Image (cartoon, rainbow, N blue to C red; front, side):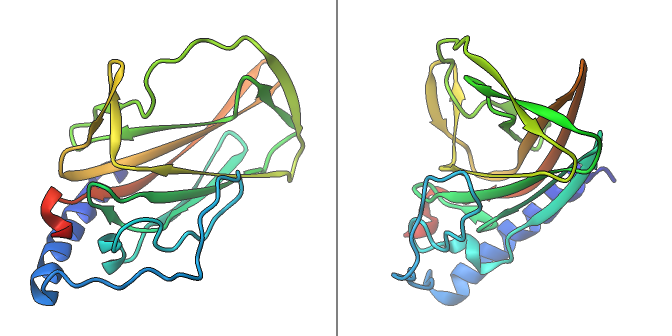
Length: 202
């Protein structure tokens, strides 16, 4: 079984477990921790419950790592599933475990994200934007680390509009790119994330 199929099978179990937990608990969920805050910085965040009751916290969130082309990418999510109106944090650390490299800067960033559904179709997470031509190279020597994070609110782009992702199991795919001379080094990390039905917070 492929990694994607394994992740999606786990997510289907998660969604069923969440539905059962909601029935047993009468839709009760833990309250938000007022001592936790969110941030828009690039570094890892322990965001806790960033929006809503956090029904996705009823099961353990995913974490993982992958190594390709002399790069290691580690990541984690702060919940396993979200309902419409909720937000999930994804936090990553990229490490250069190979030779010295550079990453692109200015109008470019080394990380990119896309959503993949159960059929394998990829959904962009932003509507098309104007092209920026600024370019720089930032050193990424052997042993260096770069930490970054992003959020997902359960929507993806269709043309020039953002739409709500239907209920189901998805993979949130992060890609980190570096360059060693003319050689492009790329590492991907796939984390499963579920979308609950719209009435999950009722």
